[in-house]
Figure 1 (tube, rainbow, N blue to C red):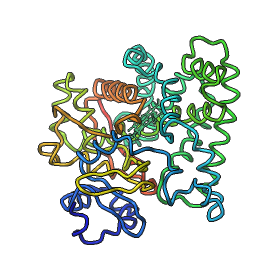
Figure 2: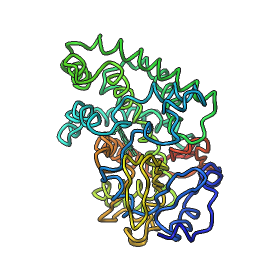
Figure 3: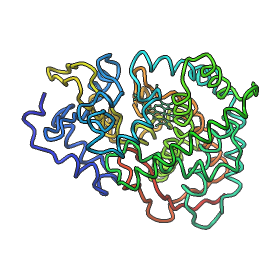
Figure 4: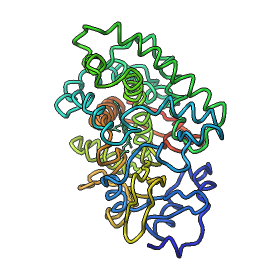
Length: 411
Ligand code: HEM
């Protein structure tokens, strides 16, 4: 493994640098060429940049997602005295499938998976289409506007709120809570952001506790019925139920990023945009390519439950591993012409939904939302242009998305 010979990399300066966050690809290409797995000696954290290493890691039973096992983790009991606020925040956030290892992970995931199976998703298309068309109707023509605040920020929230039968009056509160919670998982949270996230988490749980009770007996609200059934049978306790429901609702933030990154990538590649207009049947492969080329997240984490060996290197139990998605999705060992954007690319083993037992439960829903949104926009507007410089989020190190995307549309 080449990490031993490689020059030291200042990972934390790089990963939080605004220029890197706006365009991480050149740095990651250079580092990936030095090797697929790197150890940051001062922190003991491993970084994965190769596709094969990532695939092996996410499927390995030795690799989990419970950060309480991370030797330096915030939610370890020993860390409480050192940083009580982080301990309180991560303990409040802990008990949900995404943070759990077997057997708890499967126990919780089984409850909700029934609502996300492939057959459950296509019937949602008319609802998603109606929301996308309503939003498209409200967009200005022939004048600049911000695509993120006018369209992308709203569609995924409305879809998930309809799924859970939550009143539209809650949109501003949900958006505020989601914005605070998106910082969890960031590698540079300030004290204020931790306090905001803790307050949002508690407010979310309190709202969901009330919503669960009002939905009792409403068989049309499948997700809430599954949650109530699991609670009543003791499959999950109340804190697990509320944390998992919160995770399902706030999971839509990454779909927002795909919508923004996708539109920007298409505008920047006018030949591919025209090709998609001429061949709408390429929409599905185009969406996979958008997600590969400009991923909506920066990293996926794992914590070694036991020692894990890859390519002669041992990642010791208790280590935190961060898989850098932008590097993996352009690994030339897995993707031909990895740097180029090709909407017809097939096969396309992009990995923004993770892999193994934790692979995103909402992946089919997210794909359908993006497909419907882009189809509605391309059908409605024959002119889609940039109207200024896009602004990438530079204070969200875990997410990769746009704060604003100035565009102009016309028919
Ligand atoms: C394009 C949009 C999305 C992206 C990029 C995304 C990405 C991810 C990733 C990377 C993981 C962790 C996978 C791993 O560790 O291997 C994950 C898990 C998860 N996602 Fe998504 N997600 C998206 C949309 C959604 C939506 C719409 C929902 C809810 C309806 C959702 C709910 C969840 C849940 C509950 C988990 C935890 C699954 C588990 O631990 O078993 N996600 N997602």
